[in-house]
Image 1 (cartoon, helix red, strand yellow):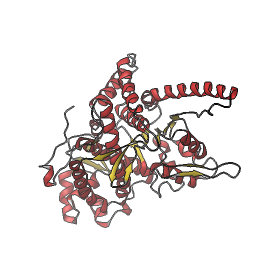
Image 2 (cartoon, helix red, strand yellow; image 1 turned 30 degrees about the vertical axis):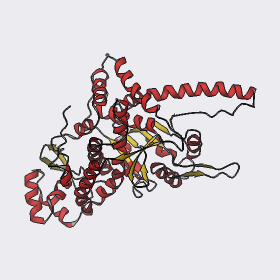
Image 3 (cartoon, one colour; image 1 turned 180 degrees about the vertical axis):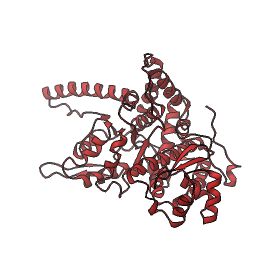
Image 4 (cartoon, one colour; image 1 turned 30 degrees about the horizontal axis):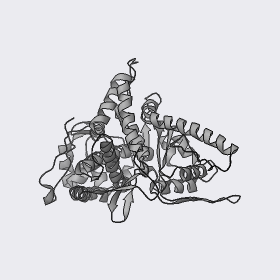
Amino acid sequence: MKSKVVSDSIIGHGRMKINIKDYSVDDLFESAFGNEEQAIARQLFQNAGFLVPFTLGSLLAAASIAIGNAVKIETSPNRVESAVVFVGLVGPKGSGKTDPLRFALALLEKLNSQYACEYKNDLKAFLSDQTLPKPVEKKILLKNSTTEALTMRLMQNPRGVGIAVDEMQSWFGSFDRYAHGSSDQAFWLSIFSSISIEVDRKTSESFRVDNPFCTVIGGIQPLIIPSLGGKMRDVDGFLDRILFVKPRTFSPQAMRFGGIETEIIDCWERKLKIILDLPYSKNDFRVLKIEPKAIELIQVWNKQDLISRQSDHQYWGIMAKLDRYLFRFALIFRVLKYAGGQHLDYIEVADVQSALKLVKYFSETALDVLGELYGSKVHSLPENKQSLFYNLPCAFTTEMGLIEAKKLGVPERTCKRFFSDSRFFRRVAQGKYEKKPP
């Protein structure tokens, strides 16, 4: 697929942008990925009816789990980010969220089975001869876990693990399992930021894990979105850390009998195996620096985007987390390219360009999903935005909106950002919008 990423002029002059106006939101998401990942997603759609966004979101999480703590990205001197992601596949029952996830994680499930057999044999040998080292159970993929059990798993598997659930509601529910919802939530905030976690127990030893790594992925039904805002999750920014993969349209798929070709399975599993073979120890992991031109691109993008953040507090909160995800996406894309035969020496401009596409996509889906959670709230907008909303006709074009915005002193960039906010407007075609009920 030919890239539509372009620069206005020479990078050295500090003027660069990503031209995304010709992309639909789902196409933007797909275009961020490499050719092999795109081909896998398209083939799975053609052969098995898997929706492309669900497949790509699952591949993103699977690659993250495989990377674990083995490779990190340097975001500034003495500061690094890991590849941790929290991914929610948003769709109604029957929309096909589970099968793409199973495909992406199949190799990790096989490894779990292999590790279980090895542990069983090692434990049997140890019980027969306790002069042998006590075996440690390896595990790379969990279904769900309490904070205490996860901490123990991370002690046993310091490279990191992943949690995959059919419905993410069960993950949120685990926060409240022992009526410690708020503390469990703080635990997961630490996981997201790779901050040391500890579990203190009165009856036995305490546990501590430095640099914890746990990626989480699961499905989310739109009907349960309103319930996600409890336990202060809508206040402490927890929901802003979830990457919502939400296809723009859902429609019943005809039954398909082609199955999944062996070549597709082999292609993906080969890449994951290469990533899993990357060496790791607590004192031996790789840190990738960002090349100077890529840093310039990030700085220019951030400066432009700050204008929109100043006029939209919800967008500001979302982007505060996506700023961190930007580096994580670039890291994951670079490692996926390494698994496809490229270098793993530093982060390139192309990696950042792809990461910025994901940032744009996930900012749109977050506004959409969280808009369903919080409602329209026109009354909470700044006065000039409220006036703009009410002065616009029910259906309007970008040009019409910009004319009205100019009368009210709303900057053009802020205005366009406002029109893309799915809490208030629905885009019906390129440059054409409809207002949602206030």
